[in-house]
Image 1 (cartoon, rainbow, N blue to C red):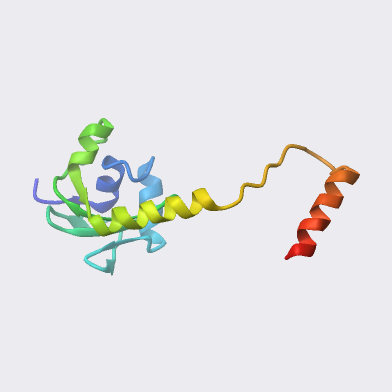
Image 2 (image 1 turned 90 degrees about the vertical axis):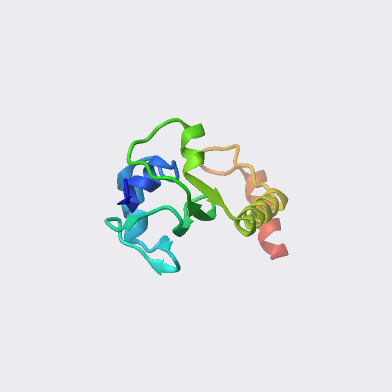
Length: 126
């Protein structure tokens, strides 16, 4: 196998849950190959550098292997190698998310008088 469609590879490498989602990400310019926006139908080969933005993170990976079939996660991880810079950025982003305050929503429906006072106090601070 010398090349495989980008959307199939992203699906097989488990960056996206379905091929439709991977094709949609390409359409929205969330995937680039060698720093150029890529269409879903583009063929990729080992050695290509991909930048993939998902809902949870941004990955920069080098393609090591090709597959157009989705398999276990352990096999999917052997298809690519993430750069050290990408790993560091994802770890930093995870740390920032962890440090953000958590707002718990316990009530459904109309807020009580006590809840409204709390919301007003929070709004006055900002």
